[in-house]
Amino acid sequence: MSTIGFIGYVLLAAVKVVGVRYFGIFLAAAGIFPSIANILPWVLNNQGSDTRRGMGIAILNIIGQCGPLLGINVFPKNEAPLYHKGMWVCAAFTLFTGFLAFCLRFLLVWENKKLDQKYGPKLELRPGHEGDHSGIKTDVGEENYGPSFRYVL
Image 1 (cartoon, rainbow, N blue to C red):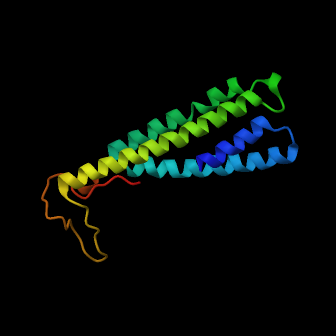
Image 2: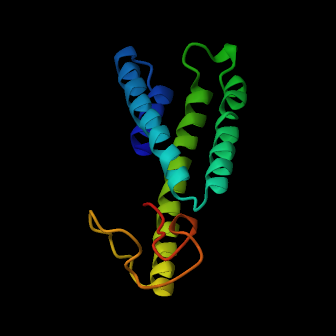
């Protein structure tokens, strides 16, 4: 999705034709806004405890609210109406976000493999069956990095 947003911002930064710029804004919106909806549950579901979930969403919101501070500096009035600098900065950050998501996915796959080596492969619970079927007893709850905890990819 970040790639779609990146293409949209590049079109907005590089092209002056109004129809193409409209197409670019649709691509930018289609790449950015669904990414936000995916980031929120990804952050929350990859935390092992309620405390970490709470801190994760707080940190995500603090970082997310820094965008307007950047926005007032990269979209100066003297560059209106095309705002080339702002569009290139948004394109760069969108590309960087995609790169970070790609790296995080590989990190989480690696972490899940480490958990599989430590506890064995995670057995999926069948509907109607309760409890941990891995046979490993622990004092740590499943939601708190127990034997059945795996990171969400």
